[in-house]
Length: 91
Image (cartoon, rainbow, N blue to C red; front, side):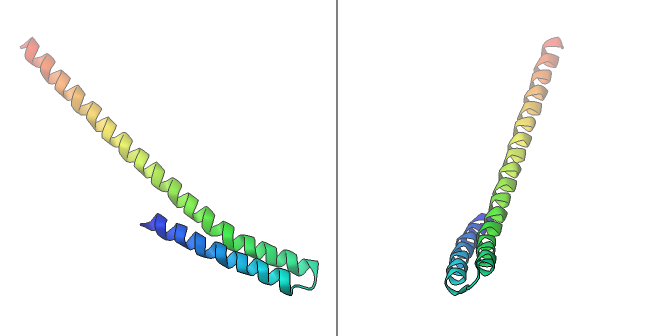
């Protein structure tokens, strides 16, 4: 759910960045004003994108950790069953 919100926010901010870029290019009279508008527009687009990608990476890492924990538990259970079988054979 959080990822959908972040990607939606990224889309909206990208549109805001495009509007900022257009406004800066049409209203700026000096190159420095155009550059400042360009930087602001890029910031509108890039920062939410980076945030969404970071959240996506954290979710992947969390899923990987959960998967590894399940595999470890399954291996431990298999080892306990193997030991129980071996003890029955020895007895």
